[in-house]
Length: 310
Image (cartoon, rainbow, N blue to C red; front, side):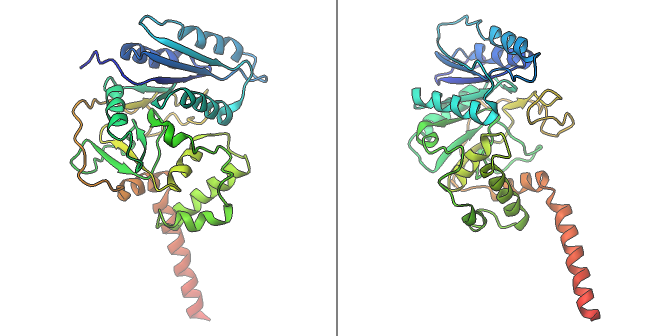
């Protein structure tokens, strides 16, 4: 199935990196979507070199060599990650009931498009399922004997979803009360440091201290008790870990350039339940939980000894 043609509409989000854009676009061209949406943020006013980079990036995606209805949303000025990305996805789902979203540094495997097409159809009307992730960040660990597993996490390095989910998106999290958040998160997570970290993210988002759009989607799915489908092999390689990235700056990150695998024959789990251990394994690494608990217990034991010595 190397020459698979995707059935779904594709949204391609680009900015200022012609080289990574070219690599990802080559895979989109191979998948030949019949409906392609391309959205680009504009250059930042304090970085004069970006004008040429943004122009060159947009030139790359003009190479449409297959029958395709192309729509573009090109911003003349920079909106920033939060507003540019969220408004582009708004635009996409205003026009499509469902579809695939790729950023300019998320290189898909050949079977990624088949995987998304298949799962979009299978779970189209299953409101338990809110998100389809293409990346696998489990560092080689597989969960269960099926090809996919379910989690509460929302990974957006190559993903797919439905209008029924995105219609609830709230980039400013206005519908949620900040005072409720720790208690509500405790219904999802049991580790106090995980709850504290997500609460901190929520507070920073509400204060507009983080220029991003994806944590908001994660909270949306948390608070709607939604499940994400994750592949047990990696279908997306983030090739954008480098100095000119917006968020992925650490070139030595274990999540950088993860090798691609293929998934053509999809076996589904019997139980549609979140793999809580999978989420915890990832968050444990990301939030450095082992060291934090070690330090916490050390301080707690020291305090106990102090009390005994009084």
